[in-house]
Length: 510
Length: 109
Image (cartoon, rainbow over all chains, first blue to last red; front, side, top):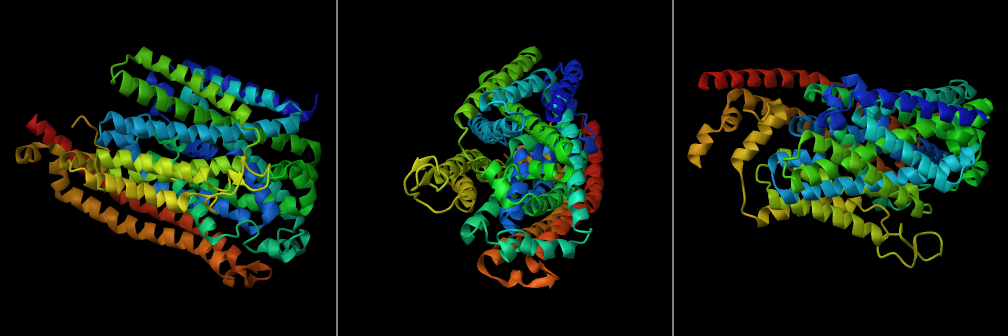
């Protein structure tokens, strides 16, 4: 039995033990969705980081830096700066207004079935896109690392995520994310340290050597190797920096702490960890480019996803390779568990609890519906992933960010900051953002390519933008504004309540 | 409608002095900071897409593009720290508003 397999088993066993203990503390609805709201700022900060740093970040960015140099680093910057939007605008009002889901925050102001329904639809769409990306990535990775076929790999990851969420709810999910975060930081730190040592712990030296170490030569250090269309680059950056604040699986993490100051502290902790991690992606990328080499990386996976594990092998032999592979596996498990929970809460809490049962479901019915929804979401995602094997993973993640930034962010912002905003504006804003982002992707080069096999369909794309953000995000805001203006409805008393609650944490009981 | 405005406890808080002070303080801090970091963030992709200026060397083989990229990390951490420091003031005012409103409730109830 090889080391990688053994480490995989240890991770599976460890997470199942966590789930067993978490299950004993997961009886009520609040325990299932928010771990009872009792996490500390540090714990939640680590869990946010663990929820956020997906395999796409770890494997994808390391690979992109290794193959394209500076351009790969754009993702690292965008994924990090995005946390300032979360900290300054979203985290505290969200904690003060919401209960279990993102839709709760919007529904706190507009208690309307349509608003909640559309918000829940957005959450489910984003989470499922994101989850397919993770499962497709997981399937490819495990296939490569353990030699299992794609279908069994997806089924294993799918089964594990279902078990964590159904039995351990948010408590198990949080602890899996915390442990994964620690493992991932440790693994990347070890590799970065070895890489830096190879460059004599000298940054100047490292950059000097990178000028000649890759086939790109000096151009490796310059922007423009991957992103050649300026508008597209800016569009991508827009989606990255504004998308995080609209990702449902990140937003629901803020309900696991007791109040807004703790939510704030958790963002600060998460931002430090995520920042340090993305600094290290540079060392991973440079190291892979210099010590593994482009040809070997591309041969293992055309998109460069194997750069980090291959670097571990080149630096530390089979054991480090096995360890990093196991870390990547843990990374995938932690992220997909968070995604199942966010999609399931939108189904069970928003659709079933509020729209169908009108908030009258008993505690027992709520927990049961949440568990059933988790199983349902998991099954649907697994089936979709089995058909999505050939899709580009980065494309699905970028799409999820673009939808989050276009459909969710404008409405979340207006809910708290715009007095005139109303129900019609919320519904139009969310629908315009969602539909425009999806349509722009459907007519983009991600889907259409004149050369057969390069994209999903053969043909000329209608637009040249690969990322819809620069059009769909303004459309989301404009949609919300136009919808508001076309309706004469205005409720100043309700807005007074919202700004008081959002800014002070005073509860509805007043 | 007027009647309702008068009796709504939230509207009373909104019109109170501490609450307007809190909102003014938040606005004065958050709006300029947001504008600053969004501008600072987008200057990088705009400059790398439409000019070659950042390809000039800053230190050894390290170009200004990398220096600017690292500055984005520093900027994020510094703004995080500044916000947490400033938020202590926000929390104090929010607590004061909370205490006053519950005291009023008790008197009324």
